[in-house]
Length: 227
Figure 1: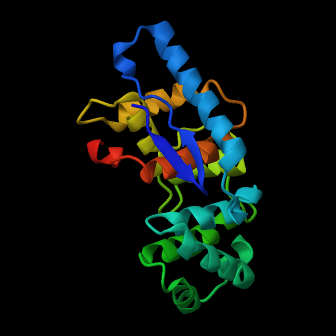
Figure 2: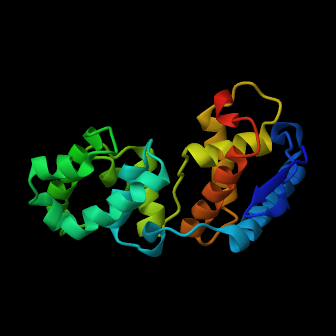
């Protein structure tokens, strides 16, 4: 599948899709390496820049992750900056007024995320007003599921973790399952783990992979319908 991708007027070929399950182990490894090289090359030329990508602070990482759940980036950006100006860290958020937080959250929808943010902040006192560098411990916080915990581990603590979100899922299905009608997350997580074995910078690898997924969204029929 050779298609073309337009970004700011510059054409770039999408990497050819292959059915990973039909390849022998050596060819599978080569296909994974090709995707890794392609994604890094694309990221070096077309990587997006956001304020939450310029920090390791667990509070800012968590804030962005909660806001970005089911909400477009363009709507998140001003709210992210607004929240940081009002409540710059976990301690400030923990002492906030619930009504003030909900009022500031207005426009993002899914208010339970705002409630979770405040609850997480209050619980973070146990760890000195931060989040632990421990995946299982993160799962004990309100509304921190596997994806959010993995994001905190990778983006804040630079640890290897399986972070499977919408854009990454789109890349894996498009790239390695072109002819399958139903692709489960278990299979995708295994492929993601193999790709992670090729990386040393997990944080920026995920940013690169997500950016490729965003580009794919504009060029191909949504592969996520098959997950």
